[in-house]
Amino acid sequence: MNREDWLIQIINTALKGGEEILEVYNSDFSVETKDDKSPLTEADKKAHLAIIKGLEATLLPVLSEEGKKMDFSERKDWKRFWMVDPLDGTKEFVKRNGEFTVNIALIENGKATMGVIYVPVTKDLYFADKLAYKIKGFDEPTVSINKLLGRAKQLPISQKRTNYIVVGSRSHMSKETEAFINMQKESHSEVDILSKGSSLKLCMVAEGAADAYPRFAPTMEWDTAAGQAIANASGAKVINWETKKSMEYNKENLLNSWFLVSRD
Image 1: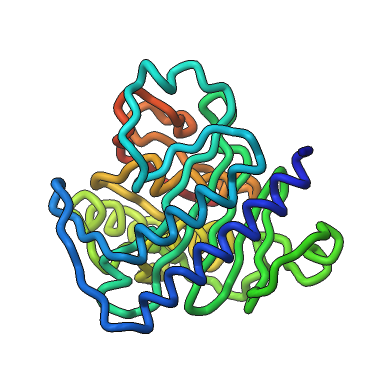
Image 2 (image 1 turned 90 degrees about the vertical axis):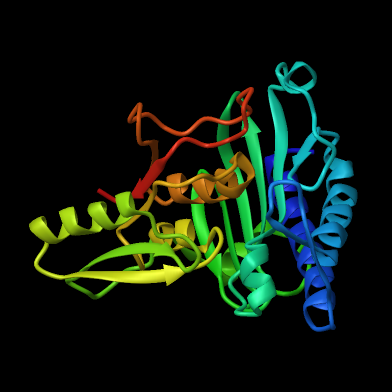
C-alpha cells in the first residue's frame, strides 16, 4: 500500500467505526467505569474491533485506547504505526450531544503525519496528509482520492469575522485556561468562547472557526494525534506548553503535556 491507499483505508475504517458507534448510540446502552474513572460503553468496544479489523490490511501495528496495554519495550522501536481512539468523547456520547469522534492517526518517528477524524452524528469528515480537508455529510466508502477531493474543502476555510475565538471543552475548564482567555482579552478587542467536545476542538482551529485551543489539563496521546495531524496540515501549530516544541508521540508515558493549538 502507498500513502494514498493508507488514507483511503483509514477513512473507510473510520466510517465503519462510526456505524458501530451509531448502532449503540441509537439504543438503550449501559455505561461502565474504567479503572481511571472514565466511562466506557459498548460503542467504544465495537468501534475498536471494527477499526482493528479495518487496519489489518495496512500491515502496520496499532496502538488503541481500547486495546491491550502495551509496554514501552514492545512499541519503543516502532517507526510507523496507527494511533487510534475508537470513540473520542465518551462523556459527550453518554450525554447524547453528538460531539464525539472516531480518531485515527499515522505516527511516523514520533510525529503525527496523517489523520482522520470522523463525526458519526453529523457525518462530517476531517482528514489530512500534507494538506488538510473537510467534507460535510460524508457516509459512503470511497475508493478514489480524486473523488474524495472533489467533495472536500481545503482547510482552513475562509472566515469572515473580526473576533478572536478560543475553543474550550464542555467538560473541562481549568483556572489556567481561564487565565489564558483573560490574557487574550488584553490584546484583542473581542474574544469569544466556542465550546466543543472531543477532538472537534482541534478541528475548529484547523478549520479556522477558532484561533486557539489551550488545553491545560490531562489528555492522552490518542486524544490528540489525529487532530494534530489535521491541524498541522492546515497551517496551525500544536505545541507542548512547557517546551514550546511540537507535540510528540509514542513516549514511554502516553500522557500528554499541556498544549496549545493556535493559528498565530
